[in-house]
Image 1 (cartoon, rainbow, N blue to C red):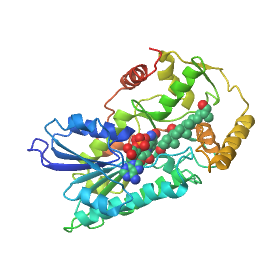
Image 2: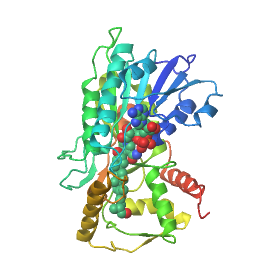
Image 3: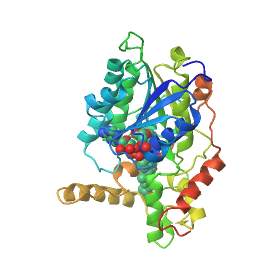
Image 4: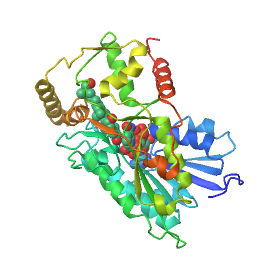
Length: 369
Ligand SMILES: NC(=O)c1ccc[n+]([C@@H]2O[C@H](COP(=O)([O-])OP(=O)(O)OC[C@H]3O[C@@H](n4cnc5c(N)ncnc54)[C@H](O)[C@@H]3O)[C@@H](O)[C@H]2O)c1
Ligand SMILES: C[C@@H](CO)CCC[C@@H](C)[C@H]1CC[C@H]2[C@@H]3[C@H](O)C=C4C[C@@H](O)CC[C@]4(C)[C@H]3CC[C@]12C
C-alpha cells in the first residue's frame, strides 16, 4: 500500500457504513483515498444515499448483512485489503437487551476478526469508544487524560462492557497469521462523544426544545467537562490509520488512539448549545434547575418505568441512572499520540465543525429556520 500515485487497486470494506459515523467514513474515503478501487459498504440497513455514490469512478458495492452472522461477514470480506469495523449497537437508553448488545458488539467483532483470518484481509481498524476507559461507575473524573493515564476502568452498563471486550479481542488479534501467512495488523480508535451532521441526540434535543417553546432546561452543572469530537475528524482518523497501517505496522499494530480535535471542553448541554442557540433555542438556568438528588430519583423512576412497561411498550427516555452519571462526570482527553504515530491533524477546525453542524440543524425538517 506504499505508492499513493499508483493505479487504484485497493478494496476496502466498511461495516456499519450507513450509520452516523459510517456514512462520513464512506463519503470521505471516496474523496480522500486515491488508491481505492472498490468500496464495500456492509450494513444491516442499507441507506438510499448509497445509490448516488455508485455513479463515481470507484466501484461502490452495497452489502446488506449482519455482523452476527459469521458466513455473511466472511463472504463480504473475501478479497478485501482493509476492513474498517464501525458497525455496532450504540445503546445507553435501554432500547436493546444486554444480550443483543453483546451479540452485535462482541460476537460481531469476533466474526470480523475470524473473517480477516479466513479471507487473508490483513488490516483491521476498529471503532472503539472512550467508554472503554470511562467514565467509570464510581464517577471518577478523567481530566485531560491520554492513552497512558491511569484510570480505574470499571463498567457495569452493557454498552461500555461490550466495547471494552470487543476492543480487547481486536488488540489481541494483532499479529495473528491470516490466510496466506501474513500477520494481521489491528488498531482501535476511541472517539469521545462524537457530534456533527446526523447526530441523533442533538436532533432529539432540538425537537424537544422546539416542543418546550424554544427552551431547554439545565440539568447538569456547567463545570462538568466533556470531550467531544467532530464526526469529520473521527472519519479522517480512520482513513489515516487505514492508510498508514501497512507502513507503520510495528509502531501502530495493537495500539489504541483517542479521537480528538480542537472542539472546546464543555458540559454536554453547554456544548450542544453551541449549535442549538444559533438555531433559536435557549438553555434556561445558570445552575441546574433541579437538585441532583431529585434528578437521581427521576432517573431511577425512569428505569423502573422502563422495566415495568417493557412487556407493553419500549420506554427509553434520555434520562436514566447511566446517562445522568455520564453527563455528570468530567471526561476530557488531551493527547497527541495520533499525531506522533501517523501524522494526524484535524481536517476540520472547530469553527468549521461548528458551522457545518449548525447548518445541518437549520436544515432539519420542522426547523424554526
Ligand atoms: N456516536 C458516538 O458518540 C460514538 C462515540 C464513540 C464510539 N462510537 C462507536 O462508533 C461506531 C458507530 O457509531 P454511530 O454513532 O455511527 O452509530 P450508528 O447507530 O449511527 O451506526 C451503527 C451502524 O451499524 C449498523 N449495525 C448495527 N447492528 C449491525 C449488525 N448486526 N450488522 C451490521 N450492521 C449493523 C447500523 O445499522 C448502523 O448503520 C459504533 O461502533 C460506536 O460504538 C460512537
Ligand atoms: C440528563 C440529561 C439532561 O439534559 C442529559 C443527558 C445527556 C446524555 C444523553 C449524554 C451525556 C453523555 C453522552 C454520551 C457521551 O457523549 C459518550 C458516548 C460514547 C459513545 O460510545 C456512545 C454515545 C455516548 C454514550 C453518549 C450518549 C449520550 C450521553 C449519555
